Amino acid sequence: MAKALFVRKTGGPDVLKLAEFDPDPPGQGEAQVRILAAGVNFIDIYQRSGLYPMQLPFIPGGEFCGEIVALGKGVQGFHKGQRVAAATAGRGGYANLVNVSADRLVKVPSDISTDTAAAMMLKGMTVQYLLRQVYRVRKGDTILVHAAAGGVGLIMCQWASALGATVIGTVSSPAKARLAKANGCTHTIDYTRKDFVSETRKLTKGELLPVVYDSVGAGTFPDSLDCLRPFGLFVSYGNASGPVPPFSPQLLAQKGSLYMTRPTLFDFVRTPQQLRKVAGELMRVVRNGTVNINVNHRYRLEDAAQAHRDLADRKTTGSIILLP
Image 1: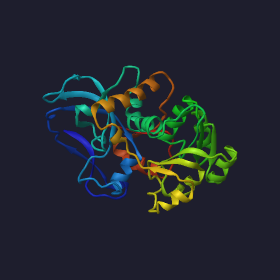
Image 2 (image 1 turned 45 degrees about the vertical axis):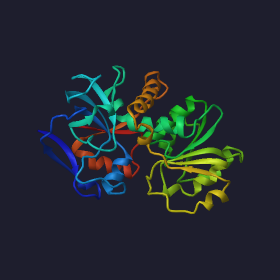
Image 3 (image 1 turned 60 degrees about the vertical axis):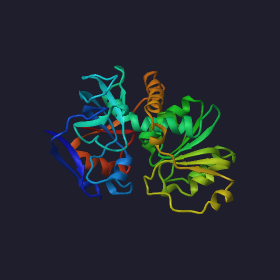
Image 4 (image 1 turned 180 degrees about the vertical axis):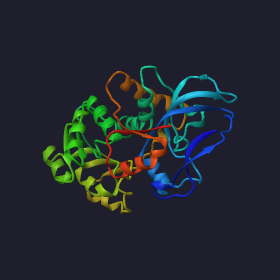
């Protein structure tokens, strides 16, 4: 028997229910993976709450690292006992065993730890497409990163700094400001004490920014638009404080012919080739020390509800993992 956390109805953290189940053997093109560690992300909260609708019941968790224990027919390039990591469309990670399409798996090099691999796939590949594809950050750019001390934020600050960018990051406490600065953030703004728009204007001497990366949502909109120079890009990729409210496109014209995008990772790793390219670049920057994955919180699988509460209440920094 295997065990997993099931969501049978959407709602608060308490809808996560631990139960045993009898796993099916891996199907055509699938690998069965014994999960060693799973990442916890805001998308898990969105799916659990119903903000992002999922077919019920489901096992949440789209980011994990584990060991292959069985292979279905037609799988090539993998073998039993191999350590692999995955970033899936939000299913199966909150368990100790999962069947997953082999074309969604990435081999984990021996010099990347299991905890690091479990915590970096979804967040790290998100940073890759944000910095390298949605807006290609270059040396000399100044960018704004909201939630700079979060899991994605810490990776983004390090990677952007290595690319030669000046990084302005918003945080909610002095401790988070120190953490962000230790991870490549050039300037921090504690939004509980100062207005991030006016501070951004000061830091850029009125020049403003070519891009804002926003995972917060309602709490930072529309103020984020006021940090952009004409033709700047507003990248909304999360809803930590709730979704961005509906607005007229005319607002973008009024604020300087701005651009806005709402990307999602899975469009950037739609094919196995895309997945390998994005994951490969992520693994290179982790292995060469450009990016350090801050795994700052570990919970037992059965304590996932508390992990969700702590993440939603912004009590965490860096990455969170569950240990089956």
